[in-house]
Image (cartoon, rainbow, N blue to C red; front, side):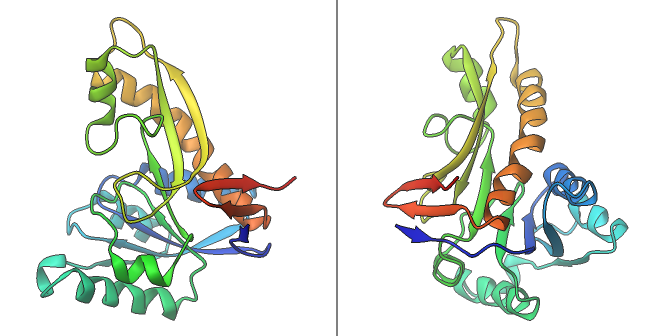
Length: 209
């Protein structure tokens, strides 16, 4: 087994493409002193992402880095990596980041890139997971926090929470119910890293007592 990191207060960087609701939830958990961490940096690949404004309101350094300004993904991620190293980041946290993470970040932050996905993985990977669940007719869906690997929503699972799917649900109503759980288990998952309790055994995440 591989221990991901020793216990200690986390230095977090967040990658976000959208509204930043999970970013806000992490910030609130830190303010409540339930998550032993500091968000040092927020980076977005979208110029008008509300997450950028939310970071600025929290007086957290925020950057828009446009992937179109680079020749390829490696160059784009090298620029991100430079900023991560400047802040001595422990964990890279994806919060609605709508791009696959590439080789540069995966190699530099092995087992230390975390994502949250609105489904019970391995079911319903990719976009519109809530719509996929409703259309398929499942009776339960939920949310998964996982370590990022080279696949799409395929990395080792840290924590999951289930929610019922009702007969009259649509994508939006199910998404709202799942979001409540997202805002609970994301910070709880990160706190396991702060406590030095996360180990990797093959593709399994082992949480020590």
